[in-house]
Image 1 (cartoon, helix red, strand yellow):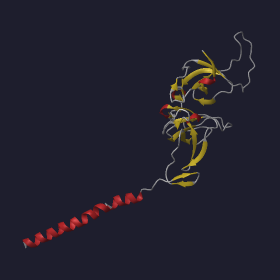
Image 2 (image 1 turned 90 degrees about the horizontal axis):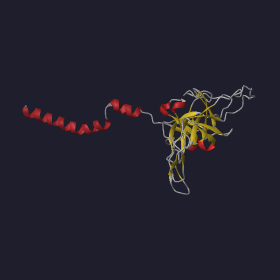
Image 3 (image 1 turned 45 degrees about the horizontal axis):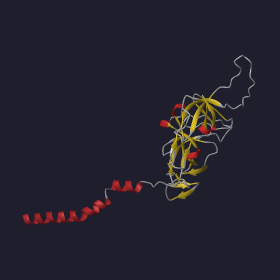
Image 4 (image 1 turned 45 degrees about the vertical axis):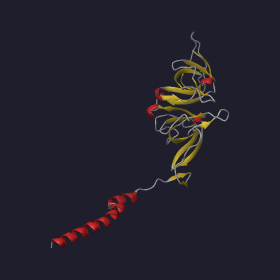
Length: 247
């Protein structure tokens, strides 16, 4: 009887050795169901299916736009009648940068995935990506980023040699009390610099610092820059090279 028990035990061990690898390869019913139930991410561009995600090239960035052109999700207020005013969006992917044709130096893209950015007027190419409105834009068409994803003047970081300028209110009279005739559509051409970018990038990939600092006042051309309405006043983003004087 002891021999029979031993033989039955050995047979059970052998059967376990045979079925063990099979059970391991199949896994538990719950794990197998989880593997079968995990849907693969589907990508599409302008309603055409894609085999995988888009990868921007050179200094291009793929930006997911805010839902509304009039009032963006981050609180950036835009005039409804001016559809091409700057808008905000989040960078989905950014290219590695571009190589300068003369020097061979790599000029890295100024933004990265996850950045909340402010786009310039008429910048880039709109596309429908994965069922949502996106825009391809070079980093030259991006005015700046918002630190911490908060849309405020004090969190705005201009790109390259750009400046964020708080526009001065137009004077209604001279220092001697003489009334001045000013139209509502008269564009402000001066103001206080709230933030300044790191500087212009040369063909060798070196950054030339901006010669204008936050706190200074500047005068710029009437048609320079892009108007932006942020909490706390009216602003304009201009290139430092568009400024005529500072004080």
